[in-house]
Amino acid sequence: MAQRTAVFGSSSGLHSRPAATLARAAAASKHTVTLAAGDTSVDARSILALLQLGVKTGDQVALEVDGPEADRVADELQALLEKDLDAA
Image 1 (cartoon, rainbow, N blue to C red):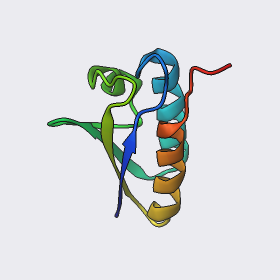
Image 2: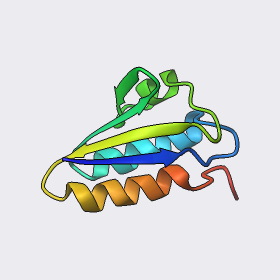
Image 3: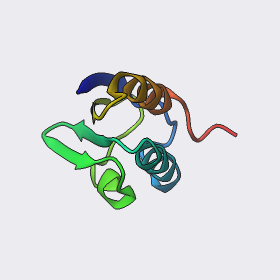
Image 4: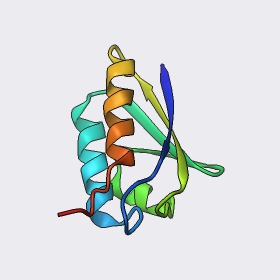
């Protein structure tokens, strides 16, 4: 299991577009991926669950990845979380 902390980078917070991008990446990894904000932890493969977190730009989130290549996947997802997914 790999754990990372990231500062959410999308300029408009975790709305539908970045949530969909993150959920697709998490699902494609074939790993169990959990994202937590505050006291709430959700399956990062679910767009609806991610939206429920209410993450805003600059919020700190915790990422947990479980699977055979957990460290590599966690690094990739952390970079995705810190990127501005709203930038054109």
